Image (cartoon, rainbow, N blue to C red; front, side):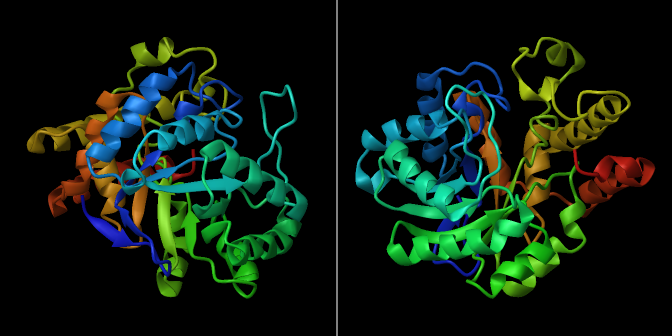
Length: 326
């Protein structure tokens, strides 16, 4: 698989990374029940296809995603281990199913030690602030992240979901090496200012949800949506499953499917390839929970033609409300 240098870091990463949100299993923002053996098989399949990094977070399953990854890492040779990216800033209380925002120095210090234990690692390759909340605490949080890098507990530091104003506020404390934003055909706001800002400053961008939480995978139909488990967060949060947005999303999927059929690909591959086609994007995080879903990794070698891109853009000209954040 193609690899790129991640911004100003020395990390050479595959252009697609393994997103470990769904393998965390049930929690407030879970995707339903998940079999851990299935999760490990999916990780193995992704690595066999050339993926060399995993993005996770303590919040995913309230520590469970990290534990699954840690158990997997323990069983494979050091030479085969992927790079591990994780986050801080969303701890939880004992017995709770949800998380809360805390980026205080004390919380970050506690979280890094717990993540290292769950992942069975001595150092994390990339450590990221998950959300910039509370906003007034981001400077202190970033000072703590810089100290963790100096201490050797993490190799590189980055942020997720930060605005340009927030990036500017912390850049003077320590260089921001990476940004992880939401970016897909259905979430394009970062094109306005965030992507140009990162490109100018050589901040690596690893975008998440390139298939819009599965909505652009080509697998989502009204029939499947009706049978989603009650604990799938998409049924309870946001408006992605509500009309008229759902109908327009499925119409976009029809466009992607028509394009995909020309190349013998899937709608999901077209959606991911579209994200990777933006020169400001270093790599994309693709969530997977079953081995067969790793087929979408082939998007890394799909190059969309100008006619394909024009057809996609015409959809948004006709539906200008569809490029906003989910």
